[in-house]
Image (tube, rainbow, N blue to C red; front, side, top):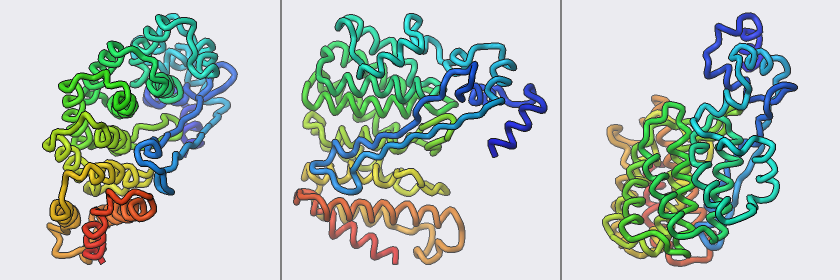
Length: 366
């Protein structure tokens, strides 16, 4: 498909949509900036102790080099590749060119001073919405995740960062990059706050409310694209809810119920079959919520029974008649298998309450 599009571009560069030309300009060539690593880190291994087979990090690198198309794309746009990719305003920050940013990544995000570090954290925020996967994922996300995990960011900066990220969750973004990556960084922030306790109870509750609403509201199921990198709103939203589920400061039963209900809305969406690990990510907050021991065995049976209800079909056997129902069946079964595998394999017994209810749900789908 890429070769065909490249032939079309060679024949008539102006005929291609600007978004596609920008994507081609992202690819490395003699006069275009390199398309750096695109990857998705499953942070679930940090949410369940000890990690099991389903919760090990998955990382991948995807590089695509086009020899002629990037040059034509850059010429057609009459802009540099960096400016074509960084269509998000103020990304990268004005005083940080790509070589300097690449050097910063190589150092593991080491700064000359805490003042420079703290300013960089806020200046790099717009890059979470950048079209360039290197700026968005390898730079902005990795920088924030690394610095938050270091435990050295001051409480006021964490509070400011949280406010900015939460405001991004429901901000319109046709490209679909900003909200998912805001959710992913928020998961790192909430994880760090479980130790640092920089957020006020009101701010933490707000993150829980907005995080649940974000996951429940996801309708963009794009996950990975070889040129554009990751979006993965469902997985990133699940990561945020997982960290909220394990945070000791999130203790309002109504909020914890809202987290559980939000997961239920995305376990088996209509007419979309998950292919990039979403069910495994969605089961993590459920396992962690079970460990809070807020919900009784009867509560969990009711929750799983509703989840496995085949309505409007008379039974799951009818799902073989159309692709949307097959996708729903596939998603739900993968979720249940992942959850049962995790609960059976880990050393905790606090989540064993899930086993009878999940097994009953799975049997009902036979």
